[in-house]
Length: 184
Ligand code: FES
Image 1 (cartoon, rainbow, N blue to C red):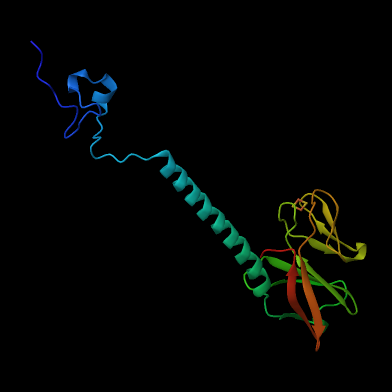
Image 2 (image 1 turned 180 degrees about the vertical axis):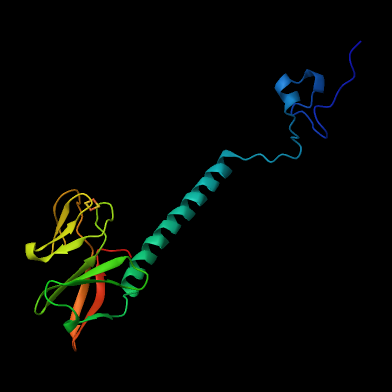
């Protein structure tokens, strides 16, 4: 005698509407209620993928535009970072510009000349120190060297120049007015 028909699952209807007992084992183990299931056609899937890709591309474009505009539009206000008389020739001081940035290094290279750079070495971010007599900045961590006038790497592991802080001297003060080549 044939065993009584057992439903595949609560409320489930096999897709071929056959008897539960005639369904393959996998279908009995994983019953799917086809009556309530929504088929996703290939066209719907393509639409979905195109929509997601489009949204992703628009997001990327928006981020790129925002970052460009942000860089242009948010130039920090000039900030006095030292009095001219405060530093003898060859001396240096650290400062932060704009607020919240990584430390910067101001060096007086002559009677009327100053340079300022990001203090973090572009190799592994050790602080660089001025070697004014040699016209260089030195990173003691791995013996990296940068040109004091340009910030370009001269020797050792660093390959990128130090981000440069733009300066202006007026009314006895040195002002930081911008930063070249930095995101901070
Ligand atoms: S961290 Fe400056 S040379 Fe390596």
